[in-house]
Picture 1: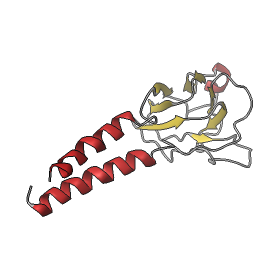
Picture 2: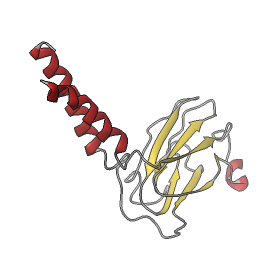
Picture 3: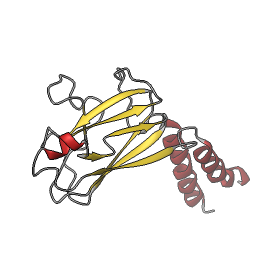
Length: 163
């Protein structure tokens, strides 16, 4: 009976010590106001601020829409064949946000599918080669899901046994 009460503690310890949660950096990129009105932000390179972000691997980048209209953050180039293959925010409403965790080194180009003149780039790990491998957002979370499942099972087990 004492063993059952250890499950929540063990599950929380596994969750807190999971490598996917350790040493995670974060950065915010602003989607500039007025970017939809004209292509002036292209010359100024400020449709996304900053237009080129340099981050280490395991960084969560959050785009915040500071404009009065919806935008997207979609991986690839407007004329490319792999549009959205790494990440795609869908429409981000005014004041809304979208986050993506960059796990692998490489150069990740992105643009707004609604306003394709809006382009940006995230350079991960100092590399300049085009990223070739798509890494799912929050990759490596299976241990976290397992820990949460164990915790949930322990709580249900305690209630079923009357503890």
